[in-house]
Length: 209
Ligand SMILES: C[S@@+](CC[C@H](N)C(=O)[O-])C[C@H]1O[C@@H](n2cnc3c(N)ncnc32)[C@H](O)[C@@H]1O
Image (tube, rainbow, N blue to C red; front, top):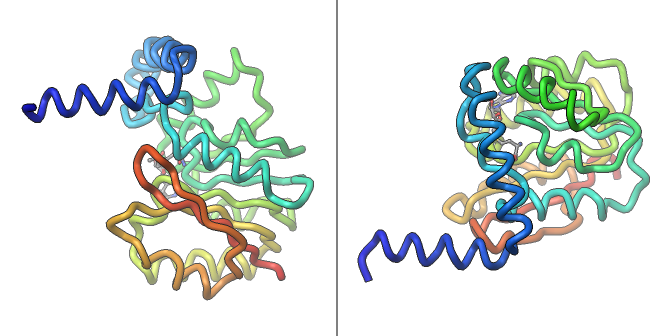
């Protein structure tokens, strides 16, 4: 089988596993989101939506299993809020450095009526936000690409400014063994899960034990 057929076969297997209803939802959302992302100048990566992305589904399920009633959830690098808006919490704070994606996320809220608060920014803005306690911080899909010292500095500064109870973070298989020693500096690993599609690992850390 040629590489093209191999790719098509893999996509078909993934689509079957997500199910026809989720594939249909994903296609409909892509059709709406493509012109929106183009209009706001946001990265087209965000066409990759929740319904056909196993790590996003795994992250939402993981967040829902956090052994705590979540009052405040924050996601840094939230994109369109595919994960954040599905986590039940009284307040959901989303930060992203991409102005276009935050503008797109806010525009989509007119239709979804999600109560998430989207802000252009990163860890610095979260550290300066008014909630003193963050029950769950989500940093998936990008954090694992950042240099070790950057990760250490950002987490050290944030944890000095706020009480952060849990952190949910992921990594790709080729990075295996990198995120854990960094996160071990700031908390205790509660659980690790794997996503079947990209073979990512997701880690939940408790930081205020
Ligand atoms: C691959 S997307 C992941 C979106 C979402 N977190 C997820 O897991 O589906 C990465 C997002 O992180 C954002 N990002 C990258 N570096 C960032 C930083 N230093 N601070 C805040 N957001 C950042 C990008 O703009 C992009 O929207």
